[in-house]
Image (cartoon, rainbow, N blue to C red; front, side):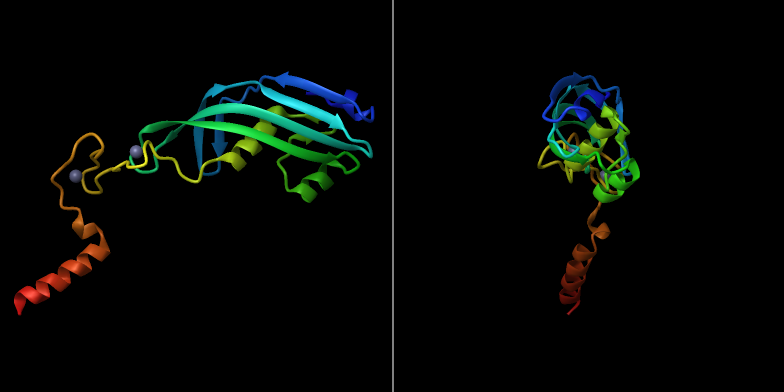
Length: 173
Ligand SMILES: [Zn+2]
Ligand SMILES: [Zn+2]
């Protein structure tokens, strides 16, 4: 997306609806396919003094494995942001000042990179298929939401092991 028109005229406001081509969110901690996406709705305003205001919103849905059982979960991301860009700075100075991803090169705005950065900020701290997800058996890997198993899982929890030691001490006396 080219911002020349709005950069050159103080007070100018531009609204646009931009399709993003991003197919997945490749974060440092995992890559998640995007299963639904709305266009990015973006308002760009020239506020004078070479400052640009970017107000945008986009709805995404990504497929993410449940933190406990690894089943795929559809995670909705309703993202909205409000950014100010100082066009007096060079690309390099701006990146350093705002510690932002490099979504702006000269007068060109890379909407995919912008959405990627905002999705990272909006990313949920944890993803569960349901609040009471029982997870996987640590011994046999069975998904405990679907079926239980007969594995003895107590040995795997050090706190439980301590409690059992105390009980067995009493039994011996
Ligand atoms: Zn789960
Ligand atoms: Zn098991």
